[in-house]
Image (cartoon, rainbow, N blue to C red; front, side, top):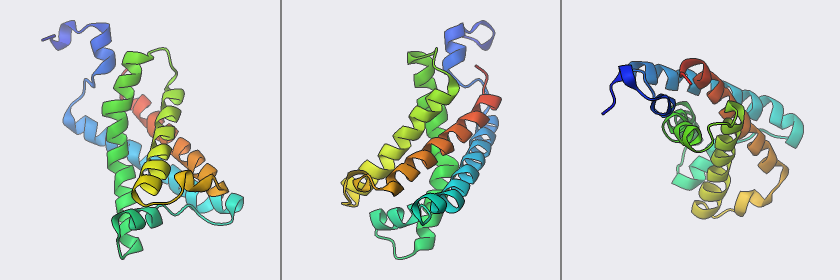
Amino acid sequence: MTSPTNMTSETARTTPPFSIVQFAITVLLAGIAAEVTWEIWARLITPLWVGGPLEPAALVQDVFKLQSRFHGEIIHFLVGLIAYPIGYLLIALPLARAIVPWMPWWLVAMGYGTGLWVFALYIMAHLIAGHPPFLGFIPLTWASLVGHLAFAVALAAVVRQRVPE
């Protein structure tokens, strides 16, 4: 095993060299930045474009057969706050650093955001909840794509400041 003092450049680029506390703080800060960005887009800007807000809680409610929209809101919030930042830090970022190390951070983030959008509107909405793929590519579909891209760029911007290259 490589000791921290003689790590290769490649090892340093693909593994987070910080403690679990630093990791948790990064997850929370990135999640907060991403969630704030999402909420501004979903509730304030999207209605100006498509006539109503993005309502991911309704999708969560449909997928999990929840009776309460509030529970859908909580689940979506916690996934965005914790799970998606962890996914970026432990899966997307290390893969990007190993496979496409030349790619700019914001492009990696946009790839991650696109993946989140595909997960939401194809896997969850279509394959699990039974809606048309990508909700039939209505204007809300494209607003959702922009929201997921903005979410991921905000998340990655925080990670970029806290995680060494």
